[in-house]
Length: 304
Image 1 (cartoon, rainbow, N blue to C red):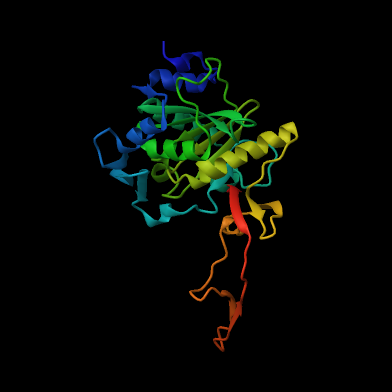
Image 2: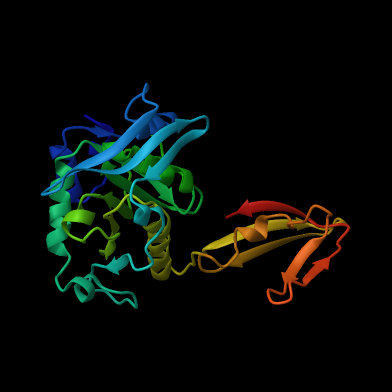
């Protein structure tokens, strides 16, 4: 009896796992790296899938490096998040685009097709805590085995639970399903991530391998939805401890959308070679406005 058999899983997922040729529950970050590269001896690995009427499609290449793995998406479009990728597949209240509104049909047919495809794949089933170990919610990733780099990336963003540490009565409140070929068979090559909210589980169906819309933004959506039900908030933020030259200490949190400068808040001031700070430049006259600041505060990043 494998450990997953004692998990409290929805019947549809249980049937997928039973039909799958093999299932691995990762034991460690080292094993995730091995999965990302396909074996313990590979230094490079192609993440590829058979797509009807197209044949073998390489979605990404993975290369071994000293501190992990480097992933390159072969298609330039896949190297950043498509801002229009998210749709809501259920009929609950939302101010976001719905699956039916965008594609003209109910999501359930594709949902069932996704389960059928996953049931034919060797799978990674990875438990993790969405939102952190202390206050987070138990969740699960279900992905094809050759998408190990995706599992590894998610494990770096959210604390994953190793096979030896997961409780036998593990009950996920969220599940991320990954089915990359559907990008080609159903969505004209576009990134599509479907949020499907049920009474007990927030499902995220990722039909592409770029982690941004699902492993990052998808988990935020999962937590936002759960927090709305339970009365707490999820912040997309960075936090920094500032220690002034006078040993005053303060903590600043910056919450906001991507591209709003959260990561930059954690960085020391960028100085020119002469130590001055370039504040602005007149692009017409080329006049530069510079500031001399002899002492600056020390920044200690907390979260990003």
